[in-house]
Image (cartoon, rainbow, N blue to C red; front, side):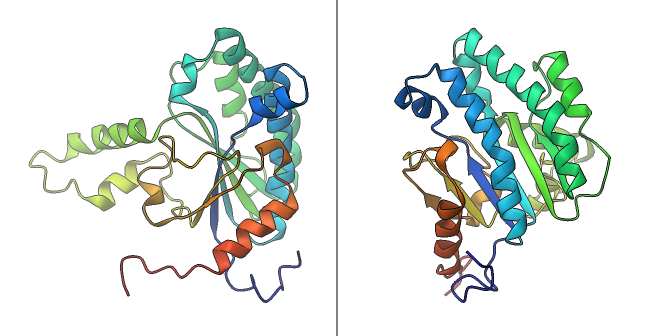
Length: 236
């Protein structure tokens, strides 16, 4: 789609958040091990990020590994982390060279040291003047709010300074705009503890297409749907 398309022009969301859903089911349908689905899903991130940047989106957040995902088999969890480490080492420099920066959202503990080193290595470099790609790894929306409240309380003895602005400033996403559009591929229709605070007024878009197959056509369908929404923010 050309961004000059009248159905979308002037209505491009600043921040799009995705749930990377359907990797395991994608692999099963291909007759492959689940880890190959995660490999395909992670490899797909660069294509989606580049497509969004070309359409004028400035922030992209991905739900890559939730606090609940620790319940999965250890072999699968370890495999996902190895894929992320390899992807960060190979892809992050190429993304930064094109003006796409990366940022980690989530708790550091108990992520393994090699993954933390890889996440620390994405800091700095060239400016993210096209797109900031935020990776929610070891992320949970409720945990994020708890961490934010804990960060605010020491300087709020009487509790009166614990307001929305203070909590928002202590979230993992501090300094970023809230998502305008939250997209969940894979056919499920729930938030799954994702960006609970930030998505209060996000437009929601659900697609049956699995994440590894969520290509430019599906991206454009989501953007067109967003362009047709009337965002009231509680007003008339």
